[in-house]
Amino acid sequence: MITIRPVCPGDFDEWLALWHGYQLFYGVTIPHDASLILWDRLLDHTEPMHGALALLDRAAVGLVHHISHRTCWSVADDCYLQDLFVSPAVRGQGAGRQLIAHVYAAAAAQGCGRVYWLTHETNHTAMALYDGVSERSGFLEYSKSLGG
Image (cartoon, rainbow, N blue to C red; front, side, top):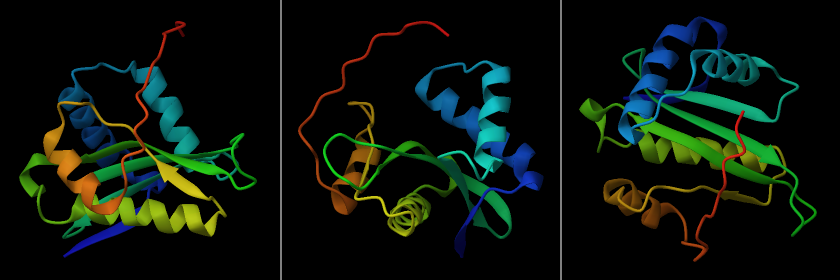
């Protein structure tokens, strides 16, 4: 049975392994110092950034990171689901759906009015899940790296 819970200090090694799996999936390398800062932020209750793990038999098999932030479009904050990853060996068993549901519940508890996220246009497996738990907004992402 898969359970979901917020990250805690003793989870670092399992979280890091999943975080590296996420980076490998997307073909990116995030500097180790940035990962350490991310970890500190996830544990800091004064930060608007949160993380949770999916556990199967007490082993971490998935992660999610989400960030609450102000928006110009409503009084309530938005919640950005930034990272979602499930180990390939357990995909299709509901961990991704449960991690998203966890973010929905956490965002609602924080008073957020909306949860949103992005995925790569080639991530068809994830889009099949997302189409069942959300609506497509129709917006396309544009970005420009500013360094740092």
